[in-house]
Length: 191
Image (cartoon, rainbow, N blue to C red; front, side, top):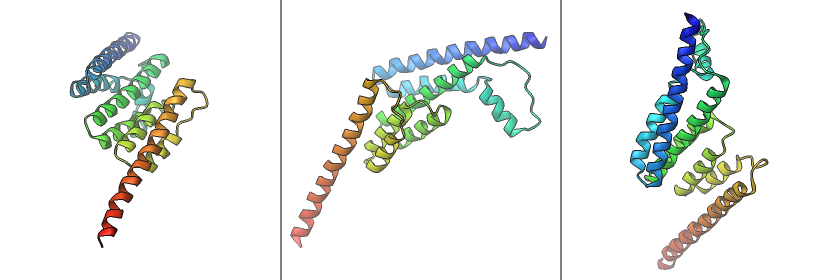
């Protein structure tokens, strides 16, 4: 009986993982159409499914909250659990990008931080977070965030993306500095 229930749970988790992936892909389609609000809805549904999975991370959380908690089920295979964690990090990042596109980079940063917590090896949330800080014109924070990305195992094209953003941050900061100095120059000349 318990073995059948465990298989049912695993099957159910596989189905939820597939549904979560379908919603993520639907969100990607809306994103490509620049329909960010609909993309957010689809990504939100994906996130709800993936967070509802009974993986090792959820069991660890339950054990921390309730020391007497015991879960003897084989809720998810390690492979599926890794897929779920990866999917969650991707979807959290995608939600953050949507918020940035909708003009709310601070909310985007919150989602990038969530993605980083889920999968600290996934570098794109840090890249997107740096872009969000650039959007907010917080250049030092953008640069600091970008510097946290370990590029040692990157493909050359990924390194170029990082370098291009670093250049963009520097150029944007110089342009803002020039704009500010021009504004102050005019003020002091009038005195």
